[in-house]
Image 1: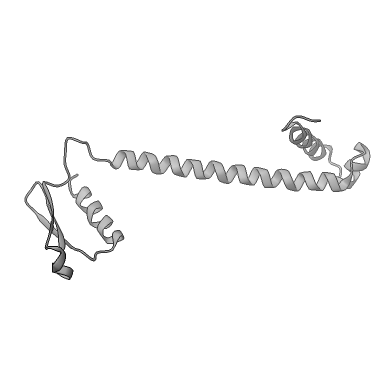
Image 2 (image 1 turned 135 degrees about the horizontal axis):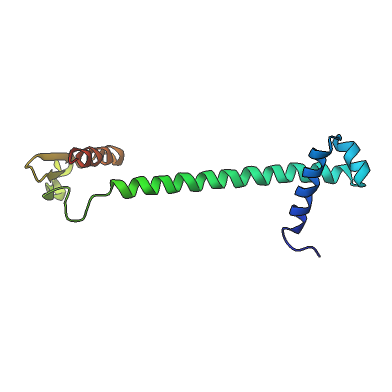
Length: 132
């Protein structure tokens, strides 16, 4: 039994030889005594594998790029983003509950308890950018 990957390497070589030969796929398969169906199967299969490998590589590049950006945007541990953080209003306060962030320069930011995560993330991103 052929080792894993050996068949793929063999068919890649066949496809390269056909391209260099200048013959049509049918003529090449006749001259090499290959089944045309096998030839077309492997041509399609190897193209699919190459496309998947390219998509995986692109995904890895994007993840690495995002990780690098995230690492660059992280704040040093010695420089806190805010001076004080408090949740004000008790459980019975309901809609009156809010989060208050006091920045090192004394600026206060109040965020209501029902704020959407995306908006809160935008607020903290803006606060972080403000420090630069």
